[in-house]
Length: 413
Image (cartoon, rainbow, N blue to C red; front, side):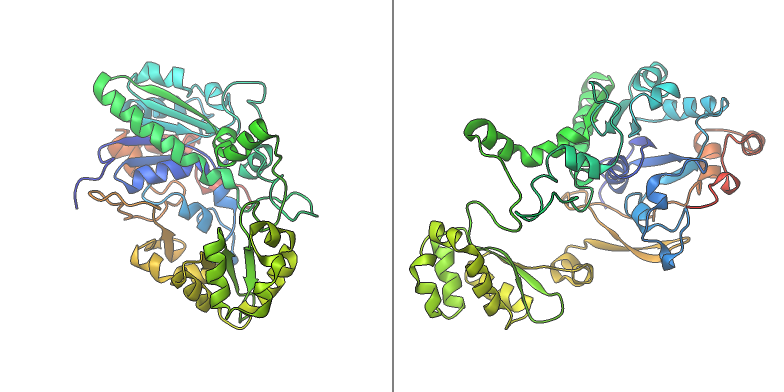
């Protein structure tokens, strides 16, 4: 295999929960050496979230954590211990990139903010990603992606027209923000190659989430239109919904964007008499009679499997797709062909499936060689072989609590 795109790049990962670890995971899966810095005293939230192997909680049993941390090394370190300073100093000297996703001010209190780290290594590229950014009146806003979903307006426009706002599933901004950071990191590394200078990258996940509602914000500014909850329907397309099919909880999504697609849909349904009624002629008429229209389409789809409806309509030029379950996704022939799911063997979880990046670099595709690490799994290798501490120094760190152990872990996950 050709040299990986980030091969030779070294990363210290102080990130937390989901957004930050996804950034460093992409770097690791494309060749970077990533060291995840953790502590048994204060577990990364993803280590405490289900699903767990066999339903049994444990710091090394979470599939959620495993998903976001493939190809990484893990060391355990109590950053609040005074003697941790020598460890972090050597880490900073060694690395090219530092990432953190703590509440603003946390890294500064530990002496690990960009200003402090750049004094030790002026060439580092340092990124911070948090809820609403490092500066401004709401910089201390705490929470997870679900809370940013609400603040960014995503919850307000999700749900049924006669219902309440919906807690968008999942923590949507966590799956938007990482890619902006990756693009910025690539640019910063190219700049450093030309100038030799490091850079500080600061991200607001709130602002990243806003980009996905930008057209609706502009529509309000220009036209005064307020985006409201509208279930599965669309302002400009009709029919536009989810329809029942043969089987338990089996559904298909159908979208008609213009009159041509409408006529194609009618033909596939056998041109029943109701399709010639004036109330369904043209988008405006169909919108006014949408509830009845959805019912009639649903009566047709009930006689077929979701896969049959999708295939028939796709061949007729009408956008349609099966509403797939997790089981469907694992068996999806397109995803199998593109090797979206890779098999790994975790020391605790055992054989399991991980998800590959949603893009492929033609010359240097990703290489997922190692499962996510157990907490502190690589202490000996990192402390001794990379950072240069002696066996006696490492033993002292363990005794003094600089290196945390299972004994320091919370009694419950």
